[in-house]
Length: 345
Image (cartoon, rainbow, N blue to C red; front, top):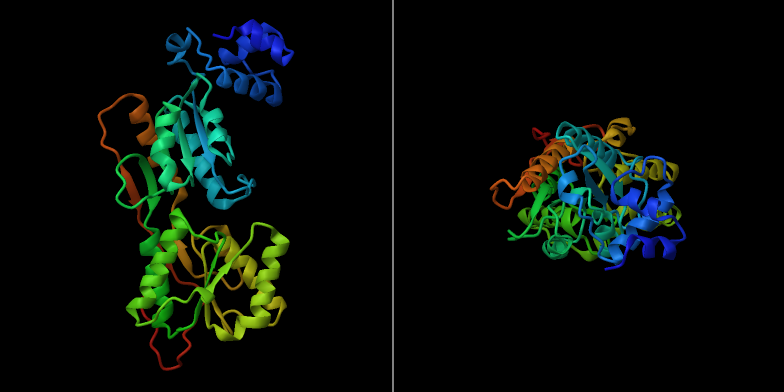
């Protein structure tokens, strides 16, 4: 096995520095140096004999990965910020600290989980079809969030009733008389939560005798400039074709309302707009946003609770938990048939 001295020589650091990383003494070390050493230890399959004796110390940690498809502003995203805060609080109550990253590849996740003092991991938004294999590959307890895979009982996932929430919201729009509804999503091929929201949207249409047309699907690119151009083009070319727009998140809905107004498309007079999440963007939007409420803090608590059971080796069946949603009706939607009575939310 590669020795500490060999790793130190290869990286141009002292053996003491490598030893400090192995033993979790990294408080005064730069993040770049620590990560460089951790990657080298992981690549060389390095293990420390002191791992078992230190496993119950206060230095033990939980890794948290936000798989955001290249979107890195985790702390400024309301959902991610609330989720991370809930995980940190729940982990601290269990005597654990957290380290988080925004991994884009499987190798990134494996590196995040590699250090010996990482007891387990919570990963948001990983590809459902790859979760079971990834969990086995890390060799450490792992709980996923929003990575639900139909009929899967091979890995732990804390999710949401995305399908039910989208179905209820779309049905609400249909009961208001809307028959032409655009669907906006930040994935060209919606997966996991977004896939379930699209499925709920489609099934609600079918329930009213309508079919989903791919022309009604609008992809919102990650690049802000390109995304805004998609919304401007929608107003110019298609805005008058639709009486309502379903957005997969409150952030995108709020962003769209601003652009719609700048191009003369009024909300809700010309088009009703809905979001999903009920975060601060929904409450600060003008008009206030009709949306589907979820509680990211509950997702965080549930994920930590299940992960700690796995870490302690408690007998717990594999769980795929779907937390409930709630339809929140505000001013961004209206009935398009004057005599149509407003249904109860």
